Image (cartoon, rainbow, N blue to C red):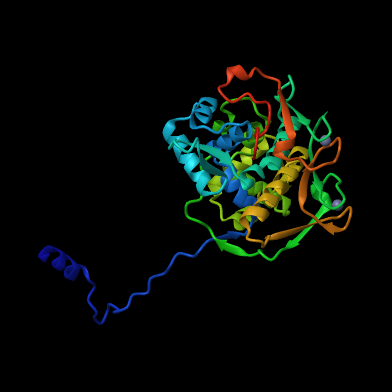
Length: 351
Ligand SMILES: [Zn+2]
Ligand SMILES: [Zn+2]
């Protein structure tokens, strides 16, 4: 007690002529970021393990050991991710039976609703990143019983949506919010490639982490230059340099000199980069629906039909919206090599 009291008294600054009795403490500026439904979705999918667990959920995994054998993931990591995804409402726990205390993990409605986003990422991966042997999965749409290549379309005119045919404006949820101190900047790109061959993994391996997603998002908002990206994202310059270099190397951006003295470059989306627009607006649609409390930060208008729209993934053969329950897979790899479930169906059984 005496020691504590002495320390307290001894260190307190004394008020006097030269020392003001009230100190003005300057608070660090509060950093903010754009309200964005893409970022909210990316917050979930950019964690490689969380993404892989959801993917195996789409392949029918429900039990702890099913996830574990599919991904060769440690118990502690799997427990952590399942707990987190349950807290975020992507999975819910259900008992094996009334007499058992063990639980299974079942995708919720919001979890299942990530399926069209996965489809959009898969199509991107198939188009740009598949190995010469072809795509790992062939999709069969049960609605029309055809091999399907789903695409991102306008909910009003059902035409394919491309970036240059969309205008945007602020929605009721527009604005800025303080950046959460916990946001991650670590790259986990290599981890995406675990388990079965997957075009979704390949897509995420290229765009990688949350920062890469956000840099690409700003490019779709028209940011081309380093300074502009840095201001919009409040990103450290070393991280931005790293992500831009990587995205150039992977073919998402091309670098162009726009000034010689001093030398300055801008970053332009390549055709491959432009093709990320579909997956990006699907993530936005999911975030709008499940994370925006009815107040989307951004409204999209399709210039071809002149209407505000919600991006929707539809079957290229029959034009119907794609749901997890209406797709079958044909695997072009031997599923026995991987520990995952081999149902050949997305979300088998009841959902
Ligand atoms: Zn349209
Ligand atoms: Zn179809």
